[in-house]
Length: 217
Image (cartoon, rainbow, N blue to C red; front, top):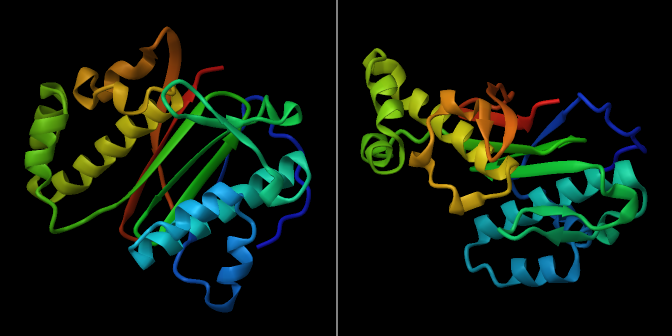
């Protein structure tokens, strides 16, 4: 996993990468070496092997991408964390660079830009009781909008709404402290005192939905 040095993103540009995070065979040890010591310790503490592999590959991908922008080795990239756990680059040379990482199933998605950004990715799971989750976590307006669709489209619409909401919570740095039922997707034009743009994005892997939220320029 190697990238040439990349120029800084334009102010209005956001770049995306997707990666398959299945176990990469003999290169797994090499990818583990791209992580920081605390990330390696976190991976070692994961009992589920699949979760451990997904974590290592996704973090290695993120560090490789960020290092290609700011220079240095991937395991030298340093993070700091906001009040609600949102990660940011700690190096002075990277403070104007923003990023977001999400992974689900066997796919990871990363976004890099120069304004606040959040991405979310979800595998569309056919066995999930999406109706119960929608009624529990979504606003009544969101539930009504989904249920007005043809039955064949509702499950994917639920997941699309979910990733759009999660992308917003990541972008504004609130995470779980911003309940998903406290806003509906059409209302995010202004949230947390800033103007936001949120929209679905396509990923090449089948069976996944994704979305981005970004602070409007």
